[in-house]
Figure 1: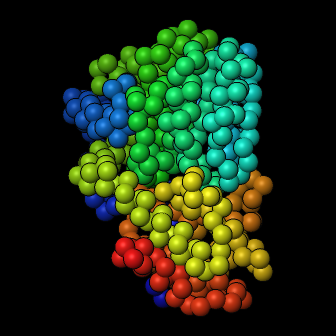
Figure 2 (figure 1 turned 60 degrees about the horizontal axis):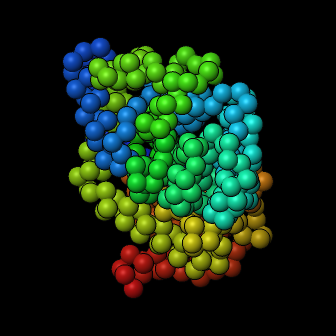
Figure 3 (figure 1 turned 90 degrees about the vertical axis):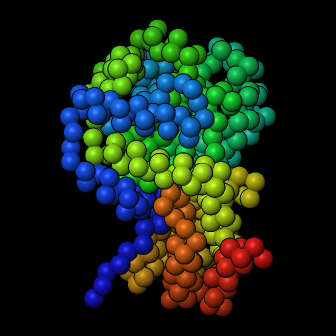
Length: 381
């Protein structure tokens, strides 16, 4: 019996064959001219994706490592921090800041909601001594995309640094680091960048560097000054995952060859088709259209069966894996990813499996309704 699997979760995501092939290349020394040339090429390509001229570092750790790097280098014990929370990963960013002794003002907008700019404006006005503002570009736990440009415009009027979790958004949703006043943007390899887990990236503005050099939080592996010293010679402070760097070089080449505007439009099209299919099947997306993510869709489970039970039926019978809910919506929603190495036919397979799973779970629906809705989006009808 064949056991073909379809991974439709927001990380790790499928890896293109060209990237897998690149990662199988013979290892080179990470203190050689060849590695330095590759690292320089990677950084210059990633600066195009980030739309920044700032320093940009590639670390051998996960997205959480990138977030901790941002916090460890900018927040000292007692510093006042504003955390804008819209889900589980906003909560994680907040926990990291608290672990470094920050005095955190938490604003939780609720799972499924986006950041309210009026609330941000009010909090910034009431707290002129804020050192850092934390926000999430794309909340992976809900499928909500926040207005980073709008938040950045407000923070830019203050002395505070703007730190952004772009782990699941960068590469699938446009972001403009310099134009939007982002002092540190964090992302990771296993989402829209089409790689296995293991690398993270952080950009650092000149405004941020001023704080980094004065910061007194303990840091060793996450020390940006240590990485900056090596970066000026196109190297890394500590041993990098050379094979993943090969893969990253290739994956970013693929994105630039497709054209970043085309990459973002592809993700937007897949998102529209997925949401149309979900609604045609009588299900409700978690996020409203004004803030719905282009890289994943959160969906409320049907009333007669738990979301996790439905996911199990679909995985066991059709080999299609959707992600579950987290935090207070665990067991109530499922998440369909459409990021990175994903195309129209991946969505057709996912929607078809969802339809059949719903029928097997006892839901009453017209087979083909979701597939038809997605097809009509793809056909521009």
